[in-house]
Length: 371
Ligand SMILES: Cc1cc2nc3c(=O)[nH]c(=O)nc-3n(C[C@H](O)[C@H](O)[C@H](O)COP(=O)(O)OP(=O)(O)OC[C@H]3O[C@@H](n4cnc5c(N)ncnc54)[C@H](O)[C@@H]3O)c2cc1C
Image (cartoon, rainbow, N blue to C red):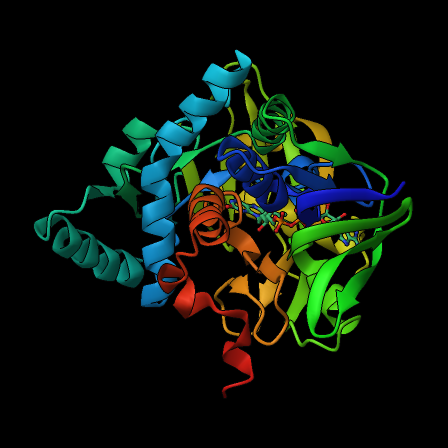
């Protein structure tokens, strides 16, 4: 293979595929290279929680990105559905932050009321109201903060729909085609070296999740990302016993439209080891026992495991690489990559197509070099 394309994307996870789709929609010729099957962590592990409210205790730039992406989601999902005729599974279920201690309940109920007074769609449910809303949850719970606008998707299905939409827009997807080097002309990056041969490109985007650092190393560029392993257990239920995503006890239960419930998730520093472990399973069972002991009889559909791309400072790396014209990065979304997909595709698409770089400034890949 010796190809020429406008944009070569390295990595076929949700970020690479969404960017490919967005660029192709703007008329760009896009080729995407994935070392395995497309889908990445969204296909194999992600719980699909769109929790911009419940995950809200982060810094301003992270919050801003999450809130903007959450707002884009309904239209993003509807657009993919119109393009494919398939359900993208966006569900505005709301999410609960469940508490077990009296002191914590006092603190969080005050916080929830303060947020509600400031106009946020947040409410405190005391133990009785929580029981009425979600009878499956443990009777030991003292209450919960209800983030009414939080939502979820079934990530493997969204990924499937996104991939079909990208292909329909003309994106050339090359599966089982690892990128193992870059083509360069002086400082400029002019393409990628793939297992199937060289590919010339005006722009190359590294969207390889936790593996992005390894690609940066090939060009002596520091992309400070590390893998954080996450294990999940997926249960099969038939009567949809849980309506809202429920956080608590060090994890969460994320119900899906088809009755499955994802119990998650571990956060482990295990390098690139991507296997379920006995310790991981034990951790997930403990979360289940504390949050919803009545689910002990539910059938286990499967265990999942994936690697989150964790950035050194909590913010993703988005934008052009300084001193390396032609090279871009879109990686490092850690535990919120599904949530952050629409805003990432939009901001990166605007930057690549229209040179609109200003909104990406807080996420610039070279920010670490400046410290
Ligand atoms: C257990 C778990 C639960 C999660 N739950 C949620 C959640 O509820 N909500 C949420 O928003 N986020 C969640 N996340 C996070 C989310 O899954 C990730 O942030 C997101 O999927 C990252 O997408 P990505 O495309 O950047 O990376 P990836 O999905 O990792 O995709 C990168 C791709 O690049 C490929 N690649 C690597 N190197 C090369 C190479 N040299 N050549 C070609 N291809 C290469 C890889 O094979 C991979 O497919 C969860 C993650 C885990 C692990």
